Length: 445
Image 1 (cartoon, rainbow, N blue to C red):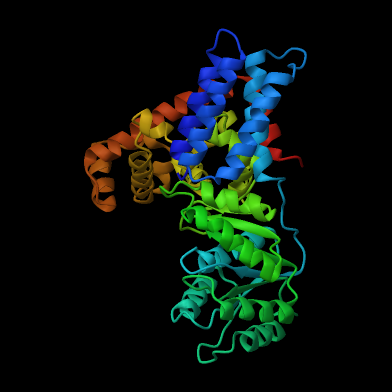
Image 2: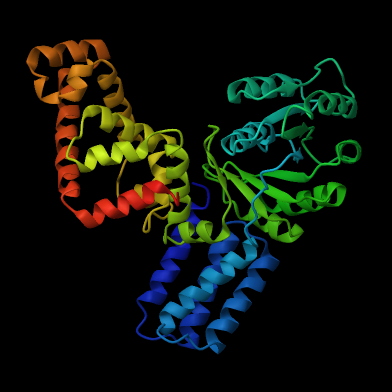
């Protein structure tokens, strides 16, 4: 994940505070310098770093900890609060009929983000549609058309027309009545140019969008600030989407840009797939960065993954002691719906960026194994899925041939199943855990 190094550095700083015998001005100044170095290395704007470090130092040296909180805990809390502060308040796009204008330079992930945004609104029960307002980049029309087909959203574009305003106006006339959310992709450039700014302003006047979202690649660096400022002056940005947060870039420049224009970050993109898209929560983001986890986002992803499935029925079967390969298959699908294992791990307390690397846990290998298990189960009969105990030597050979794997892979699946079943059996014996699970699965019903 982007910001791996920043997360590791900040976590090291917090550990220094937590392990200190007592907190004094010397420790506070040392911690502030560590934070400055970490943020500057991550490409965070110098001015922002200095303002942040002054606030942390002033509060840490002057404020008394609340009742029941130690000096060490209080300083850690101050660091957390001030990091959250630079990201601004959380803001969620409303689930209503609206027009969204997407802006940004080439290569930032703007067109891909249009598709992710459409998927987000579909999950909310709304009908999104896409308009190809980028008439200059040759592949833009085809790319957005393919994305629209993939996410099953209505699409409008005209690859022969070079007047962006005309294309957008025709698209609105065609799509506005029968759809709830119109997402307009606009042209970018390799750098900010006057004609790009003028075209954006013309589209802005024509569409009168409810939201103007600026898409910024996390790798943009210090130039993200001037870019964001220019886009903001042109169309008055209402939100920012940070993309490619799964890469190796520093990321601080893009975060600085959001703070500079005063527009909230509303989404972050963490991969290429439509599901690699999260609502941005400053508190959860900083918690994850500092190794404190992000349970709220994890639960939201679990809830989203379970929608449309009879999760409560499955839970009751598990608690009754009945756990089949069908149930295990459903579990794997749910986990896959929550994203990659490495991203899920980052949301758990202690699952700070880079943790998997440091603990020598190969998440990709684990995911490959789970996918192989699913392929093996696809080669099994319903009888075998319901009663894996009948799977002996001859059946193992047949299943392995059908799945294109070795016999040992089928045996490994059965071993994994038996281990999981024993764990579920222990779970089913605990009434307290049963009650808590059922409460979570109702999701506030």
